[in-house]
Amino acid sequence: MTTTPQEDAAPSPTPSPDDLYAALIALHHERSVEESLRLNARLILLLADAVGDPARVLEAIRQAGEQPV
Amino acid sequence: MLTTLYRPSVDQTASPPAHHPVVVIGSGPVGLAAAVDLALRGLPVVVLTAANGYSEGSRALCWAKRTLEILTRLGVGQELVADGVTWQLGKVFRGDRQVYSFDLLPEGGHQHPAFINLQQYAVEAALHRQAVALGVDIRWQSRVSDARTADDGVTLTIETPDGPYTLHAAWVIACDGARSSLRRLLGLEFQGRVFEDRFLIADVRMDAAFPTERWFWFDPPFHPGQSALLHRQPDNVWRIDLQLGWDADPEVERQPERIKPRLAAMLGPDRPFELVWASVYTFQCRRLERFRHGRVIFAGDSAHQVSPFGARGANSGIQDTDNLAWKLAAVIAGAPDRLLDSYEQERIAAADENILNSTRSTDFISPKGVWANALRNAVLDLAADHAFARPFVNSGRLSLPSRYQTSPLSTPDEGVFAGGPPPGAPIPDAPLDDGAWLLAALGSGFTLLAFAADLPEVQGVTALAVAPGVAWARFDAKPGTAYLIRPDGHVAARSRTPTPAWVAAAVSRAMGQTESHHP
Ligand SMILES: Cc1cc2nc3c(=O)[nH]c(=O)nc-3n(C[C@H](O)[C@H](O)[C@H](O)COP(=O)(O)OP(=O)(O)OC[C@H]3O[C@@H](n4cnc5c(N)ncnc54)[C@H](O)[C@@H]3O)c2cc1C
Image (cartoon, rainbow over all chains, first blue to last red):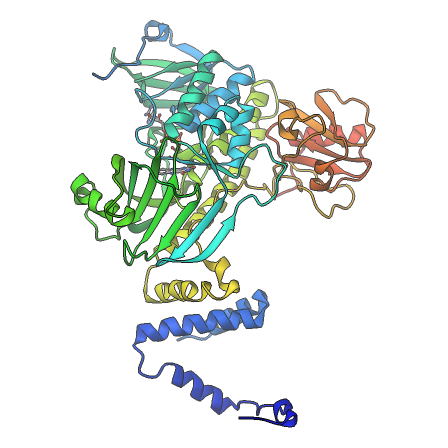
């Protein structure tokens, strides 16, 4: 397939919150609870790296633990 | 037949009981290091030990750079480095794939390596020879069975093959190990965390060309679902450590018929080996609430225990005595008693650091619960391909000296320092221009390192002019900079504008003569 330079440079559409939600569900499709835990653990580590600032990650951990579960 | 090292002492028939200024209990690496250090400081030392010889089995194997520096000050470091095998690289595998590696001493210009591997009994033997040469009175097969404490000392009862006797000690250093009798006799609690896992430790003799590195496996093909560790020892002996899990039966796992197939699976069918020593262990991380109880001072495993991952046991014990010996000698010579409280403050902080590191390593190696397990495995999943995940891999964070950041003996900086060891930290070694080493050039008391700083002599302080070179960079030195170094090689104070009054005040504070500003 060939593309024109214009098409290459075109911004890909920003994923909507619904897209993200669906992708998170899809990642765990037909996984056992243990597999899901492991996938989520990978995801958290990758996201922590993407955030780049350990202090912000610690703050997010604090917020996650704030509400009763 | 077992020979007995016991020799009767004149104290056994003394009436009233004999008095000694310092008694060390225990002849492990920590007790012997304490005895040598105190003897070098001119004190007559008696060592009482239940043992009849050196430690059985290799036990402590990895001796850290800082410990080697201390052992060199004690006069045995160089021979031990020559006898041991030197290493600095660690590799971590997941299955059969390498996921992480570390270099514990990436820069040159240090007299000692990051680590040597040498059996604990070899270290004890060298310290023992040195203690004897210094006139230390070592009494084997002399088990302390009672201790009565008073303000001016301790009355000890000692069991010997000839029956019991008592003696009086002005000071007692309790280096009687993880099952300390003194701790029990003083009714002290030793609380902490027990880890629910079992490990097989085996020393094997074999011909193998593996490099002299620390190799650690998570889930290796030869021991699925568990961890494994391989270390080289001198004389073609190798240390192998295999995780067995909490359900393993220690009695069964201790049998050679059980051990050998496990090792054969690891080493391959074509490698003959001889099993030299093996043991199955569990471990705990715990410490005494206080290390000093009047005239009884605890050091080594009697005061704190860690898991073996990180080689922090014997190393931290010898660092205890490095901290204690000069202080006790100074207090006996008339320095304020509270100098000894700083032993406790500094070494409890060190013990907590060691316990924290060792606990975290153990939580990674032996994760408890489904989430801890998932997170650990996710780190290993990512580590092979993602550089950011590698530093999370924790197969043991190897022993580093504590930096005594809140020490009451430290004087705040005078002037601005962007690098170099801050007050409380141990100083780095560096080559000097005459081929000598900086650490070896320190005096036995306080040393003033002068970097083109012209200072008149201060009584009781050895002055050492440091010529431009590697040391200048390591100390962030500028012309005029000075560092005051404690007898244990830690920084007491540093200044860009040193004066004799500054030196005197810093020495006084480091000797416990100034009220502390710390809580
Ligand atoms: C398998 C294993 C591997 C290890 N690997 C390492 C390592 O690689 N690096 C590291 O730094 N550490 C390691 N350690 C830890 C290390 O062995 C200990 O931290 C170290 O031996 C502590 O020294 P110690 O002198 O305090 O006590 P010990 O060596 O236990 O000595 C205690 C002494 O007290 C004496 N004693 C006991 N009770 C009495 C009494 N009532 N009266 C008189 N004497 C008494 C004993 O006879 C003995 O001489 C390892 C430990 C084990 C078990």
